[in-house]
Length: 611
Image (tube, rainbow, N blue to C red; front, top):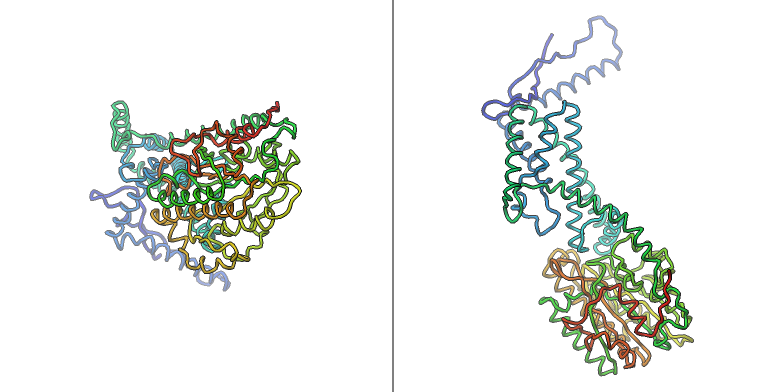
């Protein structure tokens, strides 16, 4: 009976390091021909021929090591080295972007020693299952580490395993709004494929290393014992390299930290729900709420990403401070007075709604779970307090809202204008649906400039300073805006978002210019349309991302109160805020959640707490 050969994938290696089996062959019987004269249908004959062809091709492919022994050695050693690098790298990988350096990977992970001991003790099938599970676990840890890096870069904190999965959808929407739907879909598909490949490759790498271990159990056992001894010695003697212990257990530490965070998140839900029920002004009668602002048009305005860095960073500060100085002089000339201080935001780099809700609700809302709790409660936000008095109409101007917004009920806003309700027909500026100048002009046309039976309490969100800060709008004549088409040429002449966001230097410059634009638009609106009874409170919602504000930047944001009526500012004289719209470096700093109650108290509100 004719035979053909195929190579055997033997676990042994030759003396020169070549994987055994590269030249060894074994005989494999070729499928027997049917006996002569035996009846065989056409279909069966076709299947038999196809089977022979397939087996021959498989055998030919498997025998490539015999035909190319040198290439086989290179492939074997390369695959083994990559497997080792993947597994050990995942065990010692940091979760901070600035620590992603070669010297951080020169460690002896204790998890590798424990894993080797475990795999050596298991029979074949359980060993393969355990190795695969180890690989999957390391892939998951790698994904979480990368998420930690990205969240720290953009939000100034690590990834929350309980709460933050929903924000990934917001990230995709941000990419789509900033760079187009096609780019967002391509990036999402590529990312999912990369993650799937990581899990598969990491599992295969762990299995490969486990097979390598059992090729020579005695030698592997000795090596594991030696490695364990070295690890214990380095740990006891506190041997360090590049400022970190050489004996490392990063994977275990990271897993423990995440487990504690999950537990803390679950416990926080109940604790915060109890805190939310206690409101110092929850039972205050309407007539005892903000009596000292009766008859005033009160405008609360959040400027996206307006943080301390804009005023103090050496790159952004010169331009921003020139704008603040010029705007302050123009306001003073128009008869306005101002006081400014600092608030420490509950968020950083993004999740603006957490800053808005913290300021307006008087609670520290630093995650999505707390936000949902407050939004589904009867907690009195500042707009709702003005609404409760019956002395004000309340309105929201939200150019960033492009879908249903159930939060309107919680905030107590009688009417909300979203991105599609202000008559804008001009171009988007990356994420921002319209320039701030247009949003303010629309507010004037639709609400503030109308004759009213009651004064107006407004919440306005300005979005032109939202990342990626390209292209940026420019100021145009207030009488020239029309439906916003005037901004077409400005948008086309602007920089591309993809070019700016990838360059830290250009991002910082563009960010500073965006703050200059937003402050200019707001203060010019006040000069143009403000009255003796207008009170403007404007502040940032959070600092910009770390790539712009810098690593370990504070979470402070500026806040200013501006009015023509000096009595309005006299009410907050005890706050010791800085004169003008630029807070001094040493001006008072409060946590953002303290503002609501201090503001209410300053303007005559009487506390009547809920219990």
